[in-house]
Amino acid sequence: MRWNHAWRLACVCLGLGAPSAVLALDVEIEGLEGPAADNVTLYLDTIQPSQYREERLRAKVRNQTLEAMRVYGYYEPSVEIRFKGDPIDEAELAITPGPRVKITVLDLSVIGDAEQDKAFDDVLADPGLAVGEPLVHAPYDSLRGKLSSLSLQRGYFDADFPTRRMEVRPWEQSARIYLTLDSGPRYRFGDIVIKGSQIEGDRLRKMLPFASGDPYQAGSLAVYNQRLSQSNWFSSISVRPRLDSASDLALEPPSGRAPSPWWQETELEADAAASASTEAARIDQQALVAAGRLYPDQRHEVPVDVTLVPADRHRFEVGIGYATDVGPRTRLSWKQPWLNSKGHSLNNQLFLSAPEQEFSGEYLIPLDDPLRDSYSINYGFQQVDNEDTQSLEISTETSRRWKFDNGWTQDLFVRTTYEDFTQADEDDQVFLYYPGISWSRTRSRNPIFPTWGDRQRLSLAYSDTAWGSGATFLRATLDTQWIRMIGDDNRFIGRVGMGAMETSEFDKIPPSLRFFAGGDRSVRGYAYESLSPENEDGDLTGGQQLFTAGLEAQRRVTGDWWAAVFVDTGNAFSAWSAPEMKTGVGLGVRWISPVGPIRFDVAHPNDDPDNAYRIHFSIGPEF
Image 1 (cartoon, rainbow, N blue to C red):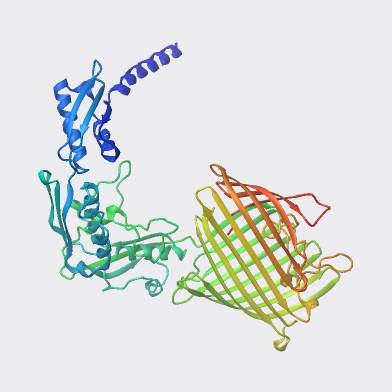
Image 2 (image 1 turned 90 degrees about the vertical axis):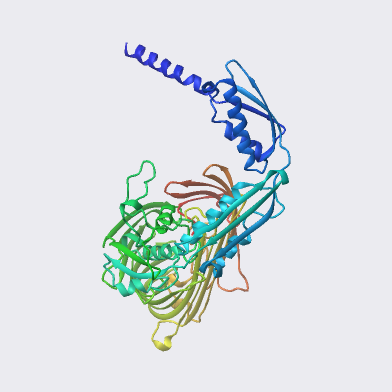
């Protein structure tokens, strides 16, 4: 019984819905092509012929057609209309467009304070309109919108268009456009009030990209918002101009959303490619509208309110994964994003796998510019049992870090290491104390699965027995990796790694400073750190030099699935004069999963006849 009622209800619904497919007027156009014809079809698509008598329908179709053609400069077309069907469901339009109106006068200007603002010059330099071109209404409307938005973004809140006129003379096929923006005075940032912060106010003010009295730029508010977010000190951040909150300024919320007390807040568009320092940060449209409704202020100042909510003092994370190099692995982290009012932070991590167990920590001390300058104290304990290496290492490191405008980071460090190790037939305990310096930079678009990116790191370290270190050496490493796309479906990855050590006491050098090659991120086809010079018994001793290189080409198969072909080469060796390179080639599959890219490779080691192939599996991004 219930099934019969359900079936009848479905039939009724289908019956009611069936006529809707023929309610719209089907249109065929002759004599007109391109965007203008598409626009006519768009205008007529909403007409329901059943709602009109034939003569009224004919008038409706004609008027809509003329209106649709006018916005493309056709002001005197001839339109013949023939209906089909009983009742009418189709219209055939024979259109003779006639002459097209062209722009004969284009008078665009900006007056007021914005007359000296280059941002407006850039807009007027490419308005999308030109004398001699056919008149199209959309670029004119777009230009007005750009000038209005730019005025609000750059603090010209009294801006208006005293002249805004388009004169069309169809009999002359001419259009004259006059548009003048009077920007009025430019507002400046007023008082900056910070509320709710657990971090010293002076420290937060040093992160400001603007100061009271500077010309207003909405993008600067978004930049400051982003800087505060990058500090990891806060769980909620609001940076907004102090606007009129009277009821008559309330804006209707978007459909389906409740009103928010933060409707005036500026937002930085989440483009990975968008730079934190750009002045072109896009601003939420509601904030722009609200910004234009400031209380009148003879000083032309905009106060700024910064409202903050502290982040949780303790964060715990657990990660579980697998890689061919180390097998199952677990990472536990305990992060304290702020410890005191100066913004000091502490991060501790525990990494567990079969060949390696490591505990490490970093105490970060931000300086005057917290995002760029800092001191860090690092400490760690590591135990390794892999191939012919057994090692127990305890280390500390103090470093001074600078981050530059070009994206590079410089670290000047002093490291202390105690290592009790066995490498092949060598057993020793060594205490090392050495300074060093490193430079690094990572850039990427879409960090999970970069479509473009590169990473470089250069590091130099020197140890000497003259100051009590257990060995004298000079060690240098260089790593670089590049990702580029050709089209949307072809991705290429290239990488080079180099290392060199100069020492006359190699037997005193612990395994953590010697060089080994092989593995998922080195030379595929060979086991993890299985490539290095060997002693007479065939045990690995580690090398003084290292060179690895790889090239991989990927092709999208479908959706988030990619196929890969690659070649890797390299080795660790004792001298540059006689390097013995090992090469692996293979095929792979890449899947951009919800938890990150998953890589599965089958590699053939060309220089290992005992092994036909080796499987490599790993999870995580390349950078």
